[in-house]
Length: 516
Image (tube, rainbow, N blue to C red; front, side):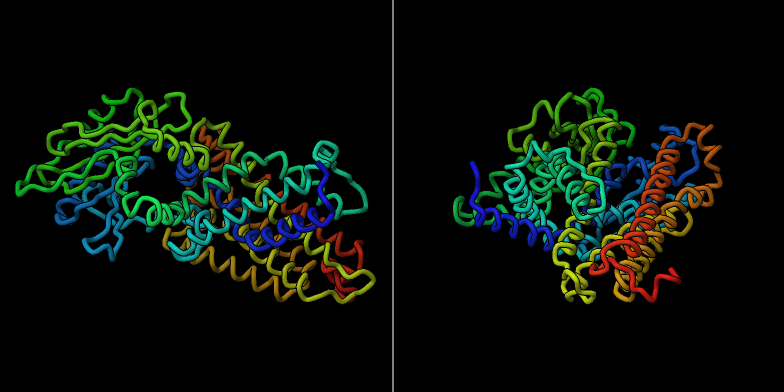
């Protein structure tokens, strides 16, 4: 069915303005999200290649648990993280006003504070969901952006449906750079459409799911909806404490009883509710391969007796839990092996390119023909796009450098210093010159990541390769490839400024060409 030209123009306007309203936020979400696909693997990148034996790791985890219980006997909700090489325990104090996070010190006999939020890897994870804005408002803003993002997807499909097959693989290389960017934007958007639909849907549910339930809670279920779905949100009902103290079973025994319930289950996280009480509840979380979309497993035990109180595994999920956990798996890409993660990584970067290229196309479409002075709107959007997008790229690369060479408490300061400096630079310089310079900054910082790993670990890339340190080699190679890509873009931006149309925000001022 052929759409009326007025209808097509309406969808085009919807697609353009929704994309502009959400594009900068979603660029950060996609770029940071592409990296967080490898959250656990990245922890192994910045360490020397020697592995920690599982037995030594569990022994350190047991000493950590004992030390925390002895030093903080009134802590009721402890969380032990086992997925990294060094076990970490975190919890909130009784009034939830302070978040505490500890690991064993180098001697293995005392406690020392661990990095808040887990260091630079988890800072990037926070960027994915909040863009660095304070929670929960940053998360809610991202949820709204995902809803609007869904509208942009629908309108984009409607716009391109009439010529979908004809222009699907069209990449018209030539003097018309706007046409080339338009073709690249369209083909990447259409080929990765299923992924973007999943992300928009799952992102909205994960970020503002409770807010989306509010109308049903108040208007349909008369305030009883949360009580109805509560069993789907927990593994076992909470049991009230008893006026009787009993020690926890050894950690190895608790882990063994959890693994006995689900073959192939490897717990990565353990929560302790009311440890030291006769009704202490211990819940083990991890993944298992049962050839289903979701691989999440949870086993709840009585911490003192080891009695099994509840088991959640993919083969026995309720319909609601199967839907929610499946959506989470689709969002994070953790339902497959390493090849799937690399596919999500590439799709995440291509999604970031969609928002960057979409803004560039808007700016170019507003160009005043035959006029050197351009309108303030495209000028402002050009500077914002360069500052936010390239500032995010440079900031994330600087996080890898600081994560390898500096104490973890410096990570947020390093990112924000690079990000806001890039944003300020984009507003101080003409767009063509600022884009050229910021892209070179991205290339230099990203290319420095392998050197930072060498400096931080004392292990050269050649030694890491010979030792089979796969995480290190993959990160270093990816960083070098991205650095080359940013350098090529910087060169192309400069050439465009010299040789492109002079009536464009991307044209270099004539007086600055000789010194470029």
